[in-house]
Image 1: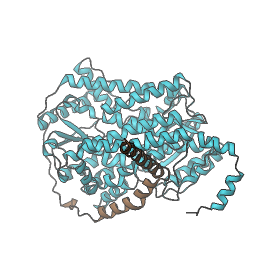
Image 2 (image 1 turned 45 degrees about the vertical axis):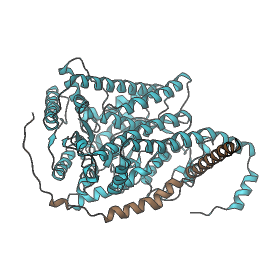
Image 3 (image 1 turned 90 degrees about the vertical axis):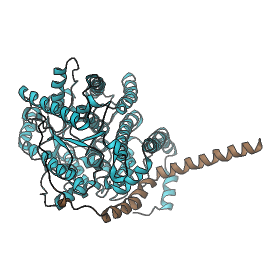
Image 4 (image 1 turned 30 degrees about the horizontal axis):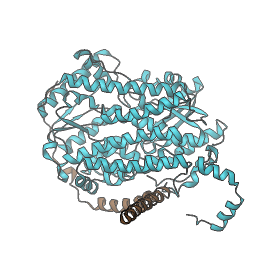
Length: 68
Length: 543
């Protein structure tokens, strides 16, 4: 019984700590700061380095068809 | 960034009126004392800390908006293939750079909001998040560039975001339709104004001129950068909103290399014979869908979808009625405008019905209890012409800073009709008219009579103020500038011209727009700001 109570107590405590931690992330806009200063610049570097096809090398073809 | 002075802070705390401090903590500061501008970090627009709105509203924001919407994102991703989502973030700039920052877009749009306005507006934005994820997930599940399903791709059609989703209603029980640009272009501008700049520059990098509408440039640029998922078998394009869009379609057709049906709508649509012509174009689209997808025209499905859409339209009018004739509307300017344009253009979806049901409860409560939702309103404004996509929170700022409450805007009023379902002929006729009344078509390029519907809508919505958007690269609306000037003078209407370049914040920054409004309020109106900290701040590098 004691063990169950201890486990329940620890679970509630962990959940409460996680909830409080999330509130701090929310209140101090830490999600925004992480995205702005770390995630976005990293992703931009990656996108800028990506190899892309040469758009001007794509042939232009037209399929003529009358649907009216 | 200024370092916090602990000693000064403690001294301030000791001297403070304890009762008032406690009241502010529990209920939040009253409007005039909030100094929301002091919360920003310079340039980035990030917050030193998010706004304290009192215990109840702060915890509502934390639990029911911030946590709930992060949860919504996880939940919606799990409905699709999460691995494809990760691949999509890595593959597509518009995805990774934009949509991860969505909660900050909530912050900007909901700044200063309290009580029922906070709740109803947030539900609108939540509906948009769900609708976006529905489309993003749909694209990635089918995108063969990142390993999506070919079977799903083969039952999916793409269409210009300005082709109303209703064209696919007779086939909704057999095939899927996902707009091309709504997610990679349109919504990105609202969430993160940086992303779109790459696409505008990409269009110009292949030698295209820089002076056409930047919306068309950006939409073409997504294809130039090869950043469009390959999720569809065939495409329907449109000349909406104007002939600039035709140019975009030519570039897209070149880069896509897929079967394509162009479905133009007449610009000057008042002539009834043109409606007949437009109806024929829609029937042509039906034939194209049937041939490409092997689908059959199901009249019952069409009627079912249209009836559901008509229900959405009736509720929209109910919201307008409350906003026009009472002080009890709980929906703020960006939530109203974005939800309306997205839902009416995309067409019927279970997401809109769920959202409307939630909002209706709040709306009814406000009306029954006569809750004055925007108590510091000094001016009831109507926003006319197309709005700057990179500043969807302008309406929120206008109210917080100057008490300018934007009641309605032009784009919201476009599709104001129910489609008849009593016979094939009537339905087709109304579908054609609906298409002709699309955003930026009916009142921006649909002829002077329609552009000047401003005056009757000012009266209808009891507005005393016009926020006149001035899209500098829209050749159509630029031609009307002088006519509006004359009318504003003749009618003695207070109107502020707000220049912008639709998605491109480099042409006119948000700060410059705020300065123009503030200068007008100081000098012409002789008014003082409700929140002086919001008059001038630097958010040039913000999302």
